[in-house]
Image 1: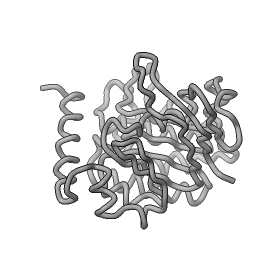
Image 2: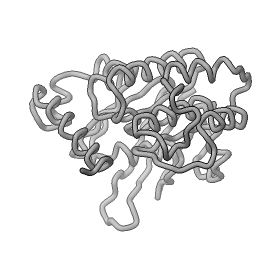
Image 3: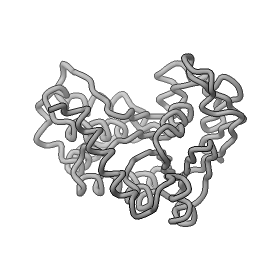
Image 4: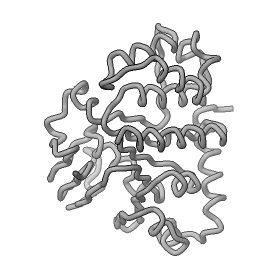
Length: 259
């Protein structure tokens, strides 16, 4: 069974006349799929449509055969999709340890074991923040906490938009390795977008490559992730892509941590 079907959709934001997508059809398979391409090509918008957060103006989006227009109730939608937004921030009254147990107890895992929380706390290095509230921890710690929430929730699909940019490199590797293993063990599909091409190529089975002219190509990462394809999509020489990634991350961090 296909995981998500984008069926002839047209979508535009209310304040724009130009559609982001027009008559777009895609079928996203089960497994781990990464989104890559320049800013402004629709990656975040398509993630939101695939997760049922946004609804198309025309056409339909099916999540495991369910039309997203019938998943407007947030609790029902979350049975199918956990969505991690870019740069999520929120304040809580409870400490993180209590929140982890609450999310797990109220999630959708059929079998629940305390060892799962223990493993997640260890892998995502949350021991130092368990007695703190979300507003009392760093951006990187909050990112790791939110990633753990998504795993504890037990949705059929996890969608992540820039989920690891504020983390140390080894933490990114640990997190993505865990998600890959989790996907294989549970059959949970994962869609994610990051600005680091190393993470894109290393941790996905499928790649969705967005082009400035509106073209979107889907295929196995091992075949689609090539120098020629990336240069065409990003419109700069391949050896400059790393510099561009670094500049983007610096700008993003400055917006979050203003001097």
